[in-house]
Length: 262
Image (cartoon, rainbow, N blue to C red; front, side, top):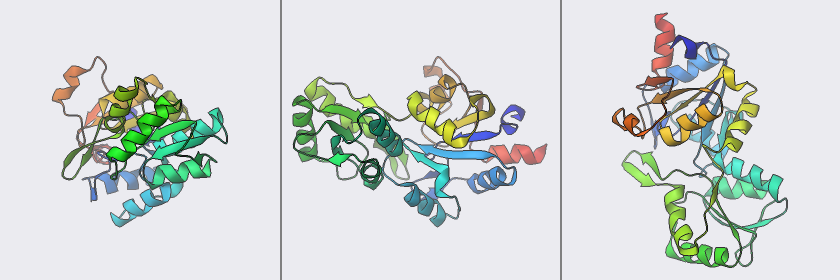
């Protein structure tokens, strides 16, 4: 734990680490207060593409946490950044919520459901057969397929729900085309996160609740990693992976508790 406490930068996943749905997880308030009091650089980096940074700030604000927009980075922003660099001024048929739609608009990506350059899929509660069918036809017609992230599931207050990769799976199967996934563990998103944080990877810890995205992303980016058991991955699940986090925590509240006990 001492090694983690001394880190200058903290990159944290959100859902399953900070909250479940609308419920703040135990110890999160103490953790965020500790980050601020210790002058740590921190970034809340999420694979969810549903919300804008402003919406995330308000979401946490309703739970009692005051966090500025600059401390959030989402897979929607990463996807928009990727396309702006790869194909500026391109067009896309987009299935996703406000966070993704707004990020692409701000990046100058034009919505097109007739002959787009890309089909982009993110999380949405309005996913339906009409959207799937249109996406399949457009990809078969030559549009390139992009997924905001490769998460199969996401935790909620009422249980596990399908996430981006599960939503994009029928399109991949029906077209024979594999999507390019921008979010964690893609190094593109992690490098941008470190740049926003203003910290070197050796000075930073990645905290998350998923072995297959958060922990592997941290390891491959040269960061120390901490797995919290407050989200998707259980202690028993660790046996399924050939790699290990530096530290296993019940939740992020373990960090300020350990600092206080020093």
